[in-house]
Image 1 (cartoon, one colour):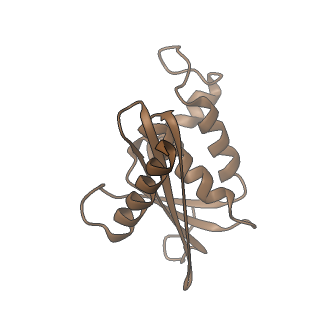
Image 2 (image 1 turned 90 degrees about the horizontal axis):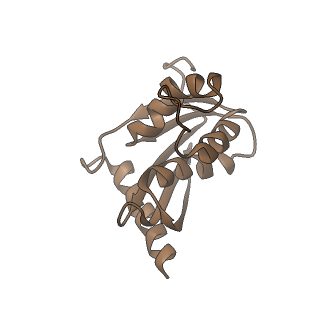
Length: 151
């Protein structure tokens, strides 16, 4: 984890949305570096909210052309805890949970691991739907993704 006094090269704000769980879903990502911003969104159906939360981070990291210091802002404790607390144990157990079952969304966890590999990451959790301007913007992008998924 980078020194918290250093500014990241990129801030990635992500969110996922799902209408029904499972149902049509969308993901949104806002990338910011200096005075530049880029918005990304997409959708899938059927899917789950957790899959869309993961997809948002994967897609955001995947557009970076070089290794960066990235501050990831998410309202998903599932994603943040998965990366910071659970993933190492899942891998050690052959992608099995502590109870011995398969890890849900293993395909996306592995894709996320690959997308994270070249970067130095700092994770920040924010409460969703609480007025955080960037989180609200990522939520709007994710809902655009839902709209695309149902077209």
